Image 1 (cartoon, rainbow, N blue to C red):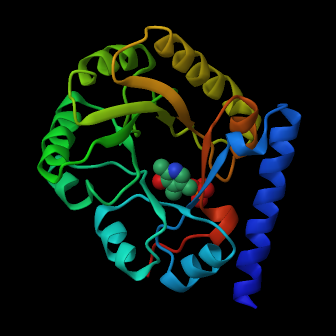
Image 2 (cartoon, rainbow, N blue to C red):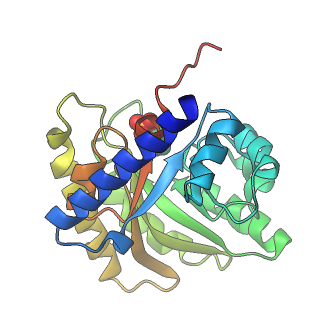
Length: 234
Ligand SMILES: *Cc1c(COP(=O)(O)O)cnc(C)c1O
């Protein structure tokens, strides 16, 4: 019963992703669906894996490193939550993409740890597009400068931007935010900064992923709509 429910949720999300792509005249292959599995048990992740998903997102280092060995190794793991510098070493060679880089100091530590492991770390710059006091991320107007600075770190590759839009009742309200991030992405791409490209825009969650796709998201991070509500009290 519960397992069927998860599969049905995923199928619904898939349908909605495809419909949003159609509306935006984008090919479905331009949008990657990341299943955000934070707080959820391995059994649930396995159902979604068996249904074909290979992109999973987690927001905590400890939970992520606990889950990785429990799951098949053809998964691309995405670290989507705030990352402390002292934890970079635990995930550096285990994740496909770090979505949440918002300071040069963090990028520097990622560079050091990536070199130690002989890898190049793929990262996104997290932008606090609505300037919310409670959110991490750089201001819109700071993102370009940070890209220039990070471009000198040779074991770090900036692949685009990430944003967490405000938690609004009417998702349409976030459209201008997503639009601004897309514009910023084009603006930074036009600078042709060495070692920086803007092929990824990670934006859109359960509440607003369709609007984000319409405004140019390449990666949507969907948790609740796939796995159900999270229970933080257990
Ligand atoms: C939890 C989380 C998501 C998924 O949120 P839902 O509303 O459950 O889809 C996406 N991005 C980040 C950074 C998150 O922490």
